[in-house]
Image (tube, rainbow, N blue to C red; front, side, top):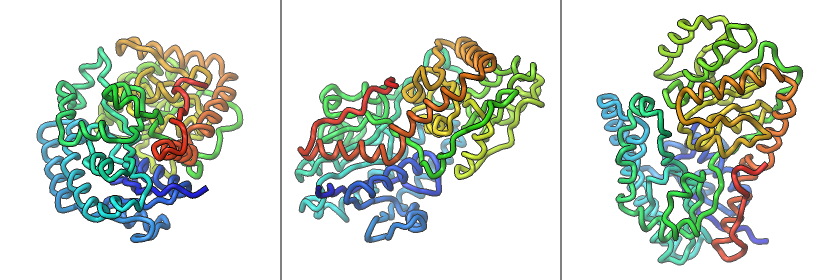
Length: 432
């Protein structure tokens, strides 16, 4: 069967970075093995992509939009420093350099798209649904299906955590729907042949007619080369629980420490806090105030390439983040056989099932702390359940959440929008 030809747009795609750039790169690289694709990215990624083995001009094109992107980055950094505004402000401002990136892209590839050189044009990144694309309408006029996504974000702040919202500087959440007024937003929803939703929350926020052309595929997956060794041997005693992430308010690290305190003091549990960030002084002060210094390690950041080795020291992932869009670290821990304990909200709640981990329902900070404490107490009392549950977690990830599996799911989307197949259904997020 002839491979589908795809112009693959990933403005953020970098094998040497983390977060969205790593997601963009990993997804794009897997798709290059499945379809006849040409990758278009931003010039800041070109050296790293070349080091990964792709040839510029043949496998990928790097667009230099730094004339807009560089000064915008400096302005955004200054405003964040002065005002304390958080992630939502940063995402909103990224739309400006992205519009210019697409302008340059159309000048380079517009005629070739119109000539039918590609069967599909697919925008992988940015992941945010608040950054629309002018390409959807242009591709529709050219008769070439435009695929948007996976897009993910816009998860409302849970009630009872307004103090965390303020500490994160997310004041724009009160006008969060203003992004729908941005140029190109309506046409992106209207003219995309398919919108790939990375979460149920994002899918539910699409216009009804756009929802009918959407497919649910979570944004994250794991790289088996980096996360391929399962945790084995006896469960550690005291039970070892890891946290991975930035030390920022919404990650809930303070709640994990509070939930673990009695078990740590009793010598039944130890915490390994992997990460760093602005909350580090507060975290260290909390550990000292609760008298937990001997049972909690907080040694700082670990490079992504070294994360597997560090996680294999633990048996459980403690991750009570209250507003996590994706939850890639949850999949990485599950792929190693760690049992996740997560807040029952947003991204992680769609990755974890009852047979593969613990999802803590909550309506307040107190409830989330109490539920996390109860889950950890249960695992301390029943360590024999950890390895079987961890094996089910690992099997779930290897079946549904590797980058090759993700690429195969996306190929089914391409077949659908080109009239070669039915609308794909990868299953509800809560299925075992």
